[in-house]
Length: 305
Ligand code: FE
Ligand code: FE
Image (cartoon, rainbow, N blue to C red):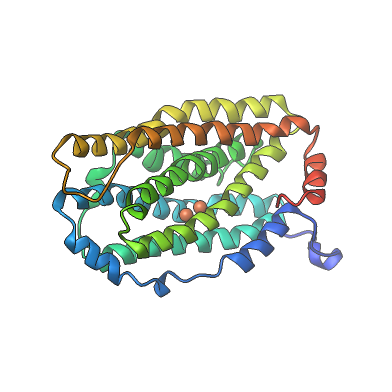
């Protein structure tokens, strides 16, 4: 398709666009390098762990590694869709988004190499629910955007990518990781990496919330598409959490008295359920706006982005 106009030649960037604001934030707050993280203490900690204790960290890492790799390679159709729709500021923000995901993928791979499990096949820890979301629903919804960038397709892509994978699963993963390893004072390197990831993901979530909200503002049909898809994905999203916490329950049922690790599986499951409710509530706030323009206007006035 030929270009008919250029926004920055006919005029300028929309400095007030919510996604331009987010782009500015990303440039400032997204500065970190996975190669700078020191994993030497993690290596020592991992060596000292018992076999059972190691098995508590690896399923989580297996979920994160594949998850970050999936979102790195699956984001392009969204960038393409926003660019084709002439959403220049959104496209600019997404350039930082993709770089963030690449760094997240790098971080986990570096950690695995540092602690000596780089060659281990961790896919045994991917449950059927995990596979349905990360191997199927995510790439299917994202790839649809290459031929269909309708509101429905964009909403579904942002729902599985931003709300379910990032908003529910990644957030619950950070929580579990900190619950288990921060409390036990183990694996400081990966915990530092997770702090950086968490900050980046905050921006990614804002992109997802905004993208869905602007399409459902004043459009009840689109709002139902979002809510229905969230409900459709929830059993598998929760299935991912149930599988991981069931591994901890098995560990706890065994003789675990010599371990410094503690699990509160119920708290982890509750946390995931809470994330589901929060994401739904956040996006549905768009009900208060009659149009995308009104949402933009409110975001300009507030300091939310
Ligand atoms: Fe990420
Ligand atoms: Fe992300």
